Image (cartoon, rainbow over all chains, first blue to last red; front, side, top):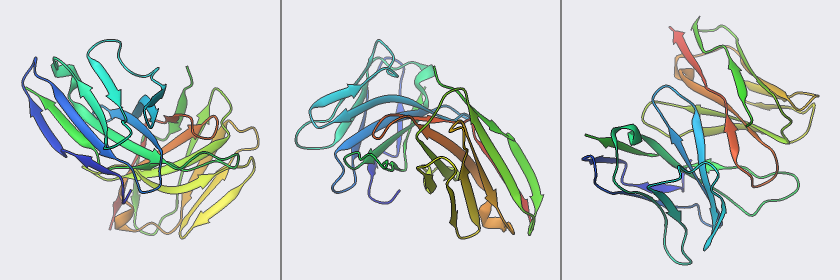
Amino acid sequence: NAGVMQNPRHLVRRRGQEARLRCSPMKGHSHVYWYRQLPEEGLKFMVYLQKENIIDESGMPKERFSAEFPKEGPSILRIQQVVRGDSAAYFCASSPVGSYSGNTIYFGEGSWLTVV
Amino acid sequence: GQQLNQSPQSMFIQEGEDVSMNCTSSSIFNTWLWYKQEPGEGPVLLIALYKAGELTSNGRLTAQFGITRKDSFLNISASIPSDVGIYFCAGQETSGSRLTFGEGTQLTVNP
């Protein structure tokens, strides 16, 4: 997972505050994915982005969550008015442009959000 | 939606033993991936499989992409204490699309 940079690694927010998680993909990667992992569970897909485009946001909660991947700068996952149930590890992953033979997805080290 | 059933949920083995875990899916995947996750870290890619029937090794790890494209297994031979962690399978429908993860196999290796 070297190369996919996430920050902050740990974030504590009070209920009702906003959380912003940042992800810089590996060099040369143009696809970014966000996944959420609740304790003792597998990773659940949230959103898939390319530069300036949201490709698939079918895993995003309908309210309070948004994601962007601007032309310049990192991808941002934004959670507004956080609640205790948002406490989880949020992983960003990146991949190069897809090919018929398949591509591989590399993960960052995660951002652990705790809502108190 | 797609579901991946991963088993076993946990394994407790002695150092030197071989380990096998598998994933089955309700739908077809074109790519199977196996990851290892250690506490406080992100998943690290171990093996990627792209073709039905493909058998691929990475050191003591061997994984196979099932013929039906609905299953995959991972074997670890001669386990060592540093193999401890959670192993996840993941399926990908098409190149670039989302990954669907299994629930993980927690591996404990006793020295």
